[in-house]
Each structure stands twice: as structure tokens, then as C-alpha cells.
Length: 116
Image (cartoon, rainbow, N blue to C red):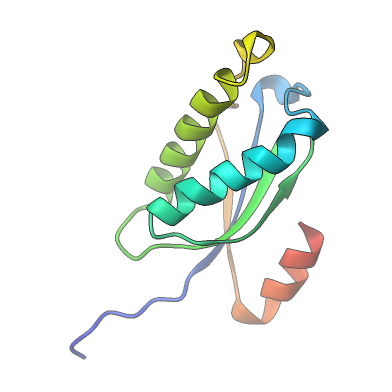
């Protein structure tokens, strides 16, 4: 085969440190858009992004050139910097160290999208 093809869908979940409510509803939509931009720049387009005041769910197409850990590192680092720039009330913003990343079969993408 002369080309490389991949269709790997990942459901990524990560939380704020100690699951503190640090993502107010008024910021969530802008944060999700920013996360989508980071993923776009990594050639990992977001399918849907959602969450709560303490954690984020991202369903995205995994790029064939990066490890999942590198995608997570870039997403969390960029989002953390963005949150801290929102104002002094976000200066202590930090993500928890870990994350969950799960592959999603094509037949379950719609169910995961609805869940998020």
C-alpha cells in the first residue's frame, strides 16, 4: 500500500486538580473552542467537546503521527495557559496529572457523542 490510512477515534477525559470546580459555565464554551483549535493544529480534529466545571470530555480523530500522550500534553498545556490568561481569578488553574483515553469503534461514535 503506497499510503498510510488510519481512522482512530479517541474519547479523552481529564480533570482539574483535585476535581475542583475551576471551569465556570461562562468560560466553558470558549474553552471548548480553544481546545478544538489546539486539536485542529495537531491534525486531530475534534468531533465534540463537553464537560463540567471540573472535567472535560473530548471526542477526536487521533492523528497518525503523534502519540496519544503528546496530544494530551499539548491540549492540557495550551488550555492551562489560556485559562490563566482569562484573569486573576484563574491564576491558580491547573489540570490533574492523569487522564483517560479510550478508543471508540466507529459503531459507537454517535453514542459517545450523545453522552458528551
